[in-house]
Picture 1: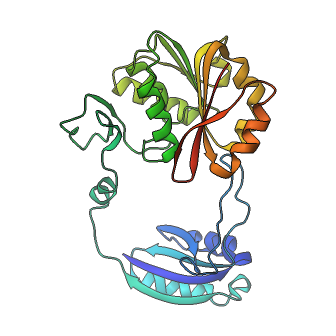
Picture 2 (picture 1 turned 90 degrees about the vertical axis):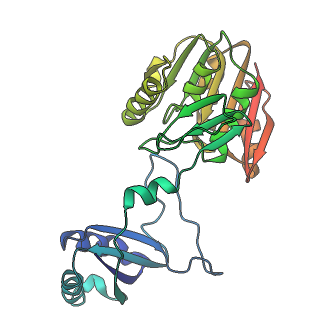
Length: 293
């Protein structure tokens, strides 16, 4: 395979990407051409919303082709186009053959949550010290235990087992928090998400781990729960404040993640009419916030 590298201004990224796909590129990716320099830009948006911009001020567009001839033909056809103005060809390079499955798997090792609680991909053996294990592979839904927000939620569950409780995982993604709650003794667990693919993934992951949880769209959540978990992001968490708090039973726990340290104050303010949120854990610039209701 051969990789065509192009330099493109922000306004031309979308048209260039569409053209490369039309020219039978096997894949097209875009990255910041100024990454690791003082000109590097952060570019991300909230889940479910369009990105704030199509690309960076200077984007490196990488297109993979089956042959060098196909990559060269793409250059020849692209250069006369109006949308190619301001773009530049950085080169065509051969890409070494690799076992992409094995390479991808090698990037996901077992993740320790506590000394004896681990998240382990199916292609790894659990560590000898693991007494509690969740088997989970990377997939379409968020939550494999590698992100600090997920790890903090899992630590909270492991150190405060919800034995006998009714638990709600709101925005369940892969279902990892719901599965952990079930593994640590919850009597009933509802896992809900606005994404049907996440709902499907959560149920499949629960079945693979030998636990029973109820999964569905947000309408599944009903009544009050001893523990309500929500690992989303700050903006939707603020919007959901009245709803999430309405699901917490008297004396129950509200556990929120997906919050940057600098956002803790605004989250506490948004929840103030309903509950007193406090920072319960910190990791890599993220915080876990909890409240007793």
